[in-house]
Image (cartoon, rainbow, N blue to C red; front, side):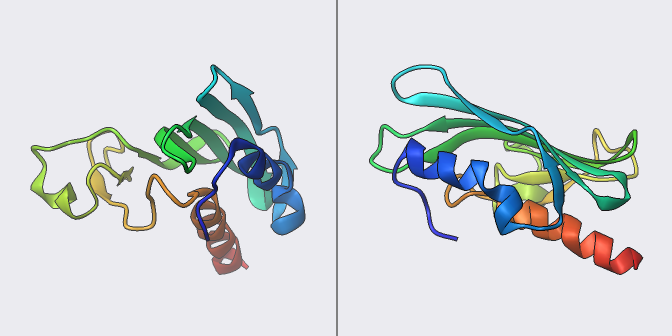
Length: 142
């Protein structure tokens, strides 16, 4: 997916997620401006089989294109946290160097077990990748 050049363009993308991805049953995702060049995206996407994607993104657009300055994405099934992604750098972990700072926390020991996350970046948006990941999990359950 292409990068976005403006906040209004990203807002249209966020507020039409359910139209673009029929697997989303409910969205509470909102964008809140925090200044002239900063905004935050937060909320939850609900899918079938009690899957939930909890989203937090910090956005900036002072470089001519909108970028994600930081993020956290959590995937749950019911109350169980299946995995999460974040952009906190771990420069002393050579196994994460290929996608630094993007990585995924997985079981076992979800807090400390991290793997590279080649599907994530600061541009273009990460949500299509994350939604597709959940759609694939739902299809594999069928």
